[in-house]
Each structure stands twice: as C-alpha cells, then as structure tokens.
Image (cartoon, rainbow, N blue to C red; front, side):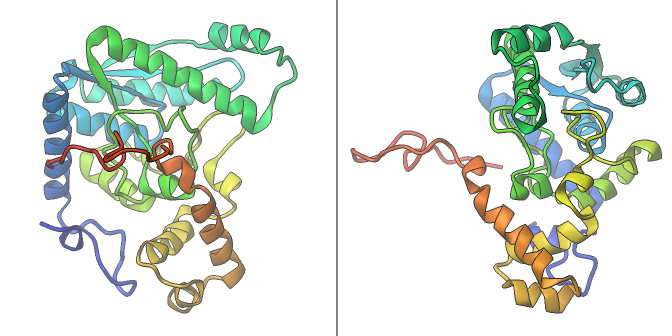
Amino acid sequence: MNVEDIMSSRYGDDPFAIRDPEETVSRLERFLTTHLEEAGARCLVLGISGGLDSSVAAVLCARALGGRRVLGISLPEKETRNDRALEDARLVASKFRIRFKIIDITPIVETSRNALAARMAKGIPWGNVKARLRAMVLYYHANTERGLVVGTGDKSEIMLGYFTKFGDGACDILPLADLYKTSVRSLARHLGIPERIRVKASSPELWPGQTAEKELGLSYEKLDRILWGLERWMTPEEIVEETGLKLTLVKKVRERWLKSEHKRRPPLAMKLGYRTAGDDLRLPRLE
C-alpha cells in the first residue's frame, strides 16, 4: 500500500480523508513495534497534554504494545496549568490503560529562570526554554526505563516549523509525522478518542492563552489545504486556483515553510571525507 492508497491525491476529493483507517492504524502500530525492537528498547514514553495529537499518539502506542509498556507524562507548570487538559490526559490514559504520571515542572522552570537571570522572560524565547525542559524530563524517564521518546507532532506542525527545536521536536520516533492535523482529527474519531478532545483548540501551552490557530493566523482546515499543495510542488497561484484562498495568505504560509527548513534537518556537517556520518552514511530503514 502506498501513500495514494491511504489519502486522496486530488483537491477535488477530501484530501485529508483516510480511506482505510484500520489499515492506517495497523501500519502505524507496525511502525512503532518495529523500531522499538530495532532499538532494543522496552517501552515508549511520551508527553500527554490532553490535546488531540498527544492523545492519538498515546492510543497508537497502547494499541501497538499494550498500555503497560507505554508511559504517558503530563508536565504542567504554574503559568500555563490547565486542569481541564489534565483531566483529559488522565481520561485518555485511563480509558486505554496507559501508565500515567503528572509531574509539575514549576520548580525546574523557576530554577532555570533564576539560573538564566530571566526574571522578566516571556514570549517565544522563554516558551522554548519550557519546551526543552519538558523534553529533558521525558528523556530522563525514557533513559531510566530503557525506552524511546515518542514525538506527538503532526505533518502540519512539522511543515510549518511549529515546534521547538530540541524541545517538543526532540524525540526518537514520530508516528504522526505524515498525517496532517485534519487527518489526525479524523483518525482520533476512529480510535474512540472522546469528542471534547477531538474538537478542542490545539495549544503548545508555553504561555497563557496560547492557541496554535491564533498564533498561526488561520484555521488548520485552510492551512492544510495550502500545505497539501506545497507538498506537491504547486505554485502559490495554482493553490489559489484550487482552493479560492487569498494569494497573500498562500505566499505567507509558503514563506514560513521554506524558512523553517533548518528545523526539519539534522545539524549540518562539513563534508571532508568519503562518507559523512548521519548524512550520506546512513543505514537503510525498513517500515
């Protein structure tokens, strides 16, 4: 089965409808189990925020390995603590029998603030610090349990660079990386994830009141239609013709996609020898 068997290849159809959800889930489960075995790891560790992506990723992990081999961790801190989100995270963990912890990272955040002399820190730089502290906690638990960290980013976020480098972008495996946000929402329905989680606004929860669509400036339904065209090397004008969206909007999304390419690549290495480790010296990978 190739990608065109899973998703539509034409704007005229619903390009984000998953034609065979159960087959897609089965492929994702095999992907997770195969790479866990290849790594010689025992379990999967991921952050569960109570949002759409992390809930879908957690359920896929539980279906692949059984909930006892999955550790979900919620990482609230006082500036952005959301008790409803914690309830949703706990609900998913309970329903799918996933091991679950809540770790308040406020002391770590405050210690970092003091160490960086950043008492008045705010905005993106400080938000990125929080995201990297969360990654540190996840990797600590993965190391103690001989596990892999599962990233919860989707294709929309990855193409836009809407993640923190070495923060929520730090992981060993990314099961949702080839599914747009709107497709993840569809898959969530198939997996039995509660509606209140499926429909809630996505947020990285790096500062109070933050939502992804507010920060990005348009809905994921529109964003995904633009990104879908960019993935197929369509020009902005061609995307406008197919979608009816404004040219300025399409160009803005395209510019963000191009400028964030560095976030999707491994660190650049200067080539001096025959093959460069991690660049053109890489082992083949099976699905």
